[in-house]
Image (cartoon, rainbow, N blue to C red):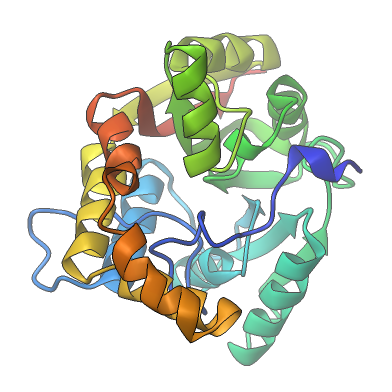
Length: 275
């Protein structure tokens, strides 16, 4: 396994994430009654899985499980059996602890595993879900081929991922810093890789506005309180007070600008295993 293809959850990636919750963006719908990140996290998963028909007893792969919150939501919501994988040892340990605390060890198994070379049998899963994980992986083509191998024929893959469209070298480097991956690619490249892997796209939804932009705006409304708390716990009160200055600088708005310009996008994509 090669750790250079994957990253752990770091401070930048966790800007708006709650310490013991989900490692992904929120989805801010117009009908949401409360301005809360935990609700937006759940709505994100609800919207992503709308295209799937997950049933009790189905076997689901959570590819890049982070701290395990998504796997727990899947098991609780659908009564399905979840195999959650992550390459990062800290994430695996945290996910296992979360599953244990939720008393869901009968439904969820957490594995430290490379998505490029999974140990599951072929035609094993009824559904595969990848939440903001594929963009961290350099060899995406091999991952999609491996997903196709472990996914049953005529069953579905749902991914939520950051996409980086054509831009200058400087902007690409800045995007890699702010979104913590130098392996982001564009939608056309994804379509070709899906095709080569035997995965047929059945739905594609640009949710940049509802996710990246509105999660960023939520963070601004709360004065980046979660991130500042994390920085204080990690580095002490001096860094905490310095953040008041740092977060007033124009550069802090760059990720939102990249999303508003659609240089960086968030897309929900569903594919069927057509082989």
